[in-house]
Length: 295
Image (tube, rainbow, N blue to C red; front, top):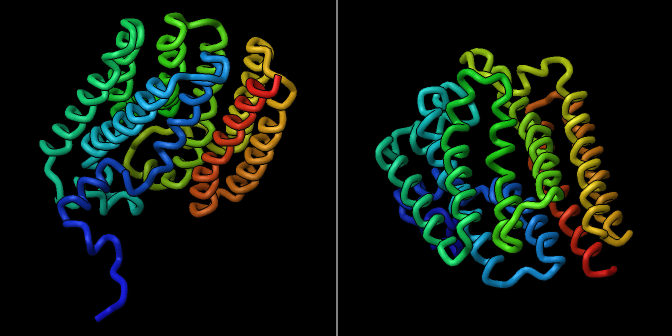
């Protein structure tokens, strides 16, 4: 008898399929969604958000990202079977039905909405808009040349919601942080789209990687530039100390490394660049935290 079993062998196959559908086995999407939300919570609370609000937003991030993955797979089910990276997804491979995927997405979204009931009315109103955008995004790849911008709006809505929950308002720094995050999403999701570019062209889908064409690396560089400029602007408005630039500089180093990876335009390198953005987001989080606590 073997001394160890794989974790997958200990989990029922049906449950494995549900986990794969909502990408709990691939937490990178949760982290990329969570970092901007945490930036917003820190700045809105001057470095001291309540435990209750942090827990609500962290759980809400996991739930809404999971719901988004389920509805994304439902929307892309007829395309995913023709793409090397996605052809074995649970919905495409028939392990989960279309009805199940939709019900899971709706259920997770409802639980997420119930989670924010202790928060103020403005936060709840913003959450409805965020859900609508998240639901629309997967379908924009059919007609909009820059669906990554829509994803950026969906992924960044935790920022104004964080300010709304803590300050019951949305100041200018929240919107600057939000816009900067939209450009960050365009940057890293373009790297992600570069992995599937040949498949997407063949299937007639639209992505930023296809739209930017041979200027893809330049466009990603500009998007990173907007992100870092917006962070400096917010740091000045929020009166962060110079310690902020320690994290900012580390994040800049991450961006330079990621740009070097995508310059090759190789699938593995582009995917590696996408994954590495987790460290960029974490570096900015640390910078904001230091800038607030070490004034």
